Image 1 (spheres, rainbow over the protein chains, first blue to last red):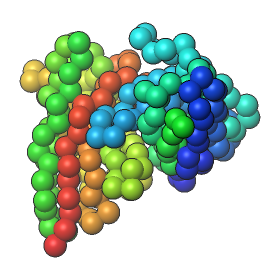
Image 2 (image 1 turned 30 degrees about the horizontal axis):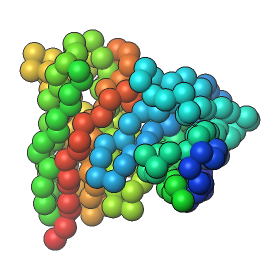
Image 3 (image 1 turned 120 degrees about the vertical axis):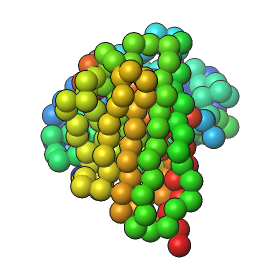
Length: 111
Length: 121
């Protein structure tokens, strides 16, 4: 399985909204409601931000929201804050021989 | 509060073996599926393997199937990953991650801090 496709970098000013895309296929993103998103600050472990396309775990800010259209999922961060500067990875369940596939990762920069 | 602590990483030559451990606390370990996920130096994440709550079901990524073995000891709240026939491309930080249900689930709910495996001659 190939990794899901994400833009290498996205940037925005404080207070703005940004959207990160995650393109897959009908065998993964498009075929299941099992897309999750992870935030990773340098030297830290990933943290679950969104699961099952659009659900937030308890404690995650409502500024983070997820959606999906066809084979592409998206993570939107609204009212961008300095603490949101991090790497973001999408992940999807896959019907292939490898059960889960990750995106290539997107670095978010707050200008 | 969920805590996952990995150990066992180190520097190993190609073709050799290593066993990683992940000690869990803060939840009922024996009722949740558990995963291993690795992160290569170029920062990419890759799912490696998953075991069900009782070890009865195990699944692997194509890249490690036949070389790595996931197992668990519920009496010790510990997850293991046996890495055999190691290759240079297995060099990565290995994280254990908790599922939200008894089997694989759809997300990696909590993560440890990881342990670094370096495969080099």
